[in-house]
Length: 163
Image 1 (tube, rainbow, N blue to C red):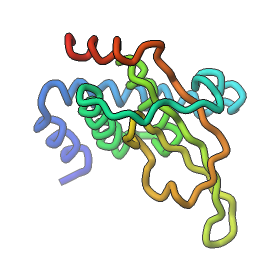
Image 2 (image 1 turned 60 degrees about the horizontal axis):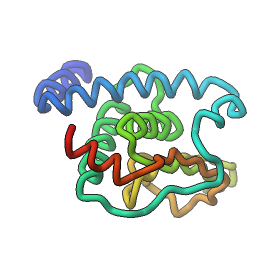
Image 3 (image 1 turned 180 degrees about the horizontal axis):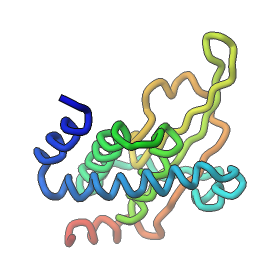
Image 4 (image 1 turned 60 degrees about the vertical axis):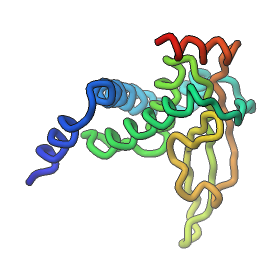
């Protein structure tokens, strides 16, 4: 069975709400991939507040949404016709969370590979949860932090309850 047919079979098994989120993730991954082709100096202003982090607080309302967004991005990124690596998935996740008025922090880090080469990585955190790129983050030294903050997080939670 080909990868494409497996993809469609997997997509068809999802609940309608998750299908919608997968489609949304696909479009935000495409958007992020185009952004990623630009010089970082042009992308940075779109990433939010520099050198600021968002809260690590748990939320019984927002945590399940964070999990669904993480799953949708992870499932979709594996099947895009372009490379959807850490920076792309981080930006896509940030946009999906922002659309729902949920705060997030994008971390940029660097490390040395086993061969001594400099490698970079990006990961996204929202509340206490790492939404994208969490694997191996302990190896990286954080060199950049960008946050998307909401003015009133409790307002966002009540909107999510009513949605």
